Length: 403
Ligand code: HEM
Image (tube, rainbow, N blue to C red; front, side, top):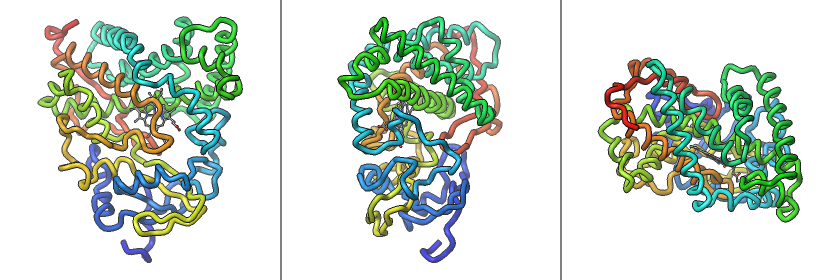
């Protein structure tokens, strides 16, 4: 494709379900920045595929993350994000809201959560081994784990957790109608509102209490507190769930590498390599230019949209040797799975810890864990933004179970 030919449509099609579209390899080599036509509305935007250019876009304040910026590649029907949804805001509002949470996601705080995450994982594995086989690992672990961790983080009372699990199951369900999802979001918002009242009256040692009682100090409104809590649920749920699904499948396909995940000295790096190789935010991150900016030799004009493809940058052979090989011993520093720049994932320390605890526990307790179906029969979900598997049927030999 040269610069005058018609732009290709986006997203590009995958060949192998475990790799981004093969076309990205050619684009990185020949046209690191190119025009594409978006399938969802036919609009044209720039596509950026190399590691260094993805980072250049994401760290440049001349690119906005706000849906309402002219040229932003958003569906016209998408409702504007509500108060507190700082993932879709630019400074200064973004900085004000993100700052209010920074302490909550620091490594020391996340480490305090580790014993709770370990307990949750063990309980889910106990429940799974007590039932019949095969088991869908998504249903048994990948979906409940992140939601129970968020309950712990926010301080959702135990009695309310089934309600919470029911609501988030609808949000994560691809077959739920838009009306049903909206209904559940409204219910969740109303629930958060009541929970904030309860935390105001009787603060406890949890994120929502600290945010609620500290809102004057942080300069955030009550509505923004509810919005932040809802954002954490949305951002920390489907991502972790799908990363568990596709990441576990990748591990099951490379059983010789599981010891690297089990060894405490190498498991953190192993988690990062899975994040690099199986980047679930496969579509890429969307931005709109608010000034003319040169990227990879082309000028992106103010009012034009850009998609920075994390999954392609993570397979860039200028940065990673044999980038298509999953090698859990690789030290995959600087990968882009959590984005880059001011919006880089706020929950990344927590995400790494959840994944590490899960995979270590799962493969230690069930060393014979394996797929219950042929890998060719696994169905992949490839909707707009998050990649993963639709289900993951697994079996194991009960005589090899450990506690
Ligand atoms: C494997 C799991 C996860 C992945 C792959 C992931 C990925 C990402 C990415 C790529 C972004 C950047 C979005 C952008 O620049 O437009 C992001 C932002 C964010 N993530 Fe995560 N995430 C994960 C887990 C979590 C968890 C567990 C939480 C919290 C409970 C979380 C909270 C957030 C928040 C609040 C933002 C917005 C940050 C900002 O705009 O400043 N994420 N995440």
